[in-house]
Image (cartoon, rainbow, N blue to C red; front, side, top):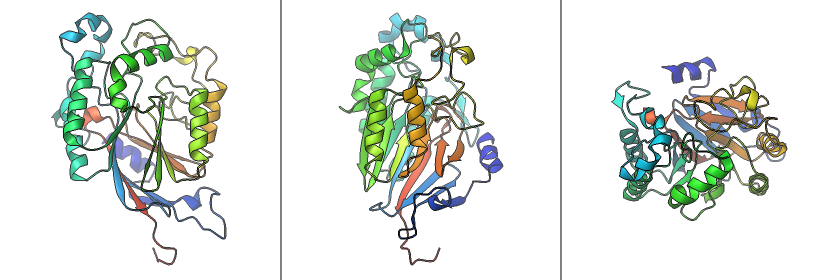
Length: 335
């Protein structure tokens, strides 16, 4: 399958890496005991400061299109995306699927795996339908698994609705999506789980604000082992514009989809200095164990400065990442 072909081509399936092999975070007096490994869609992070084993289930790109009479007045804006993912195929088995079934199945898997957290990282919805948002909230309540949510570029976007992306994001977060944040800041969040700092940044406009940059700086300066979650993956050399946060060619001239998606084109002169500084800061963060993203709909992995960035398969096709966090073995243990 395409996901396995990608992993095979970079020879990472089943591989294990010590962060000391890729970065200068360790010193002779305090050798790094941090590791990362991947098998299929199971990710493992290990660090000496992790207090106990736990797991997180990561979901992106469910693209729920559920709607009802409350959405009739917005039909003109939801017409294309309401038909985009009605019928899908499971990314492993090829069996018939749809976003509702896919979402329920992953919540069941998260429960069976006793996940400490379900991370919903963008494009859970194809547009901000009240029916779909209410349905997800009910499923999450029934599962009783703690969760965190951040928006993707489709969650707040009604195609053809006028206005800049940042304004539309704020509008529909406040009108529809707000209950999913559970009183957390929609644009930047952090959770501490058993010694691991999980940082969630909303980059669904492809850009980073000054406040988000300061927030990330403060988080990473805490020197806690951390994982960054965002919807749009960060630019990696050789990757397409889909890896659009910090991409040097992200600009209006190269925006090929703004007419299809009926939105304003990307910024004329490319990314702001703040977005580029964020990109640089992330890949130079010594305590960052990894980055987890969605948006592309295909699983992939890149390692930059010792930091792995893993993109999840679309949940609309049954995709998810199961992430296990474990304390490192004692230094005296032979691997």
